[in-house]
Length: 389
Image (cartoon, rainbow, N blue to C red; front, side, top):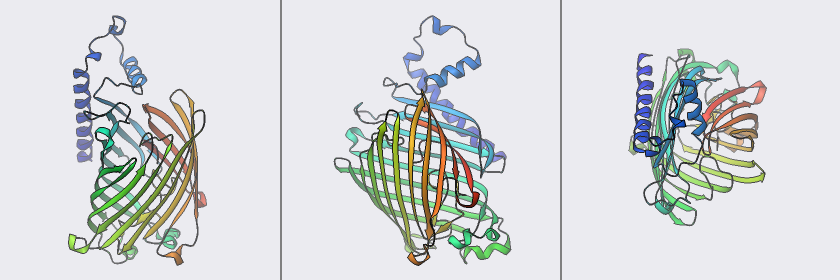
């Protein structure tokens, strides 16, 4: 627990240092009217800070804001989270092009869960190139049911494990035509299941409890979204092929095909209809940690993350996003999906639905609270930043 606190404190210190530098370099924070020089108490300053976070600041090279506080999720229970969201444009980028974005996050909870990570999309001048990246690590005392729909559907398979996982993925895209991108990607994954009850070792199908995966691949994208993390119009078609061969040091040799189609359309004042169809297909021998999984904070919300896992998965969701008043909004969604080993094992479609609240933390960057519902009374609460898709 001491190490967790040190990590969270370190991230917090870096974020505060970055924000202090930005404020010192920006003369607009120095030149204020006499009325703005009136001494405010702590509460007033906090309210003023959050009141300004979603305003356009084209005069700032790097617009960063920090938010933190308590949270609750069905899986991790009560905890404290810290998020820093930044918007910026590289030198030479036109103001008409959407800004680049970066998010740093750190969470720790009462059940022993902790996570630290960074993700972002860096857009180069004239949007000729894009650098997309994700890196995180977490430790999570969680549950594991085994592999396959039938195993996940059997409550007697529910077993406790302490899962530690690290993931790094970097993708570099080159624009070939208008809205059309192609480029390579590299990734590294590490997963370890600790404190597994010997009675449930059988659920891992003879695989090692420690998995290291090294991969590379390429992706093709067609993207007309007006804003990557919170689109109100456009489409996004994504096709990726990832390879993790044995000669690269992988104990489990396999390759993964990802297909994603997303569409966004304004339906009325303040209303956006968003849809997503996603397929993830593993061929070869993927490890227990690299299989397709249902649940989590972005798809099939409400299902326990990883309860249902197998070689392949198909999911779909449609979401109505409605801005209600000032920075506040609500969303409703319907979804469905399942995991399967091959076409003969695609037995049933699992239903999904939910409702959520949105608060615009920064311009078009939302803090979201989602309550999702699934089969047989399954439900889950999600606290996160940026839209689910």
